[in-house]
Image 1 (cartoon, rainbow, N blue to C red):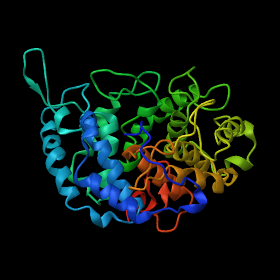
Image 2: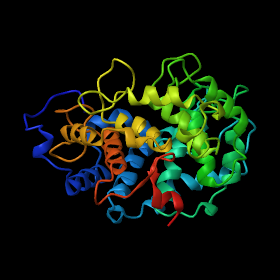
Image 3: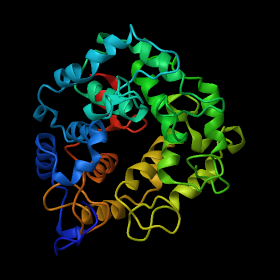
Image 4: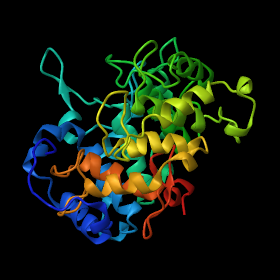
Length: 358
């Protein structure tokens, strides 16, 4: 979906403008019918739904969504109520990425009704929060209690109870889930903090795991998690660097080096600029109170070159749009305070209105 050049159009940002109505139509189309190239993403259906519904919320067009809360109630919560009576120590009772992953078979061919994943749970809760679902209607205590089983001795998290990779992505999911459910019983914050701090690299950025290369997405997960867990002080830029739990000056230097000559942001050193990092890196700068150092005019221009004439955004200029880059392109324009867009709660990845619960 974002691998092929498809048209020849004037990419001069001075000749085009942000097209809110076209982006709304693009997301409406995706809400009604996902194109066939997304068939391989069936297991991530909730993530795609998050991009669509939260994207419409950013565009102040949430009224285009109908019966979403009822849909998720029928598809997910009915089985959550049964889990209360089937609790098995060590399992995670969250949400499934799609109906196809809700049931799997054991060696005897018997269906096992639990394939819950932390990323899917994060997406489900953001969707439900966006459409105003009453969280008291499901057993959040069971979800949190079982999620804590996924935290490892070093403070990191596995995404599923059957075992998988452990890295900063799932620390962020855990922090966001606890924040939205207004309870920190689902994780040990101190252990999570220590794991995050161990992931800061020599250059100031954060890798997904200790000792790995600094990456824009991993750095967002680290900083957003610390913000959600209330470990970041206010006025980080004005305080003595030695008083911070992270190396803020080095981090700031690494972040600002990610904005390239074309105005866009790259996720790692010596990589091409990419629409999504306007949010991943730009959002971190907003959390730190350092977004004033962004060349906003240049970033605005870069993003417009990735805006599709059909609505949505592509990864690079002149490619087909896709849901992932469309959503984070909209997030980036919200950070740039584009008229007609709702403001973002950067650390949760949803609008301020939804985060506050208005």
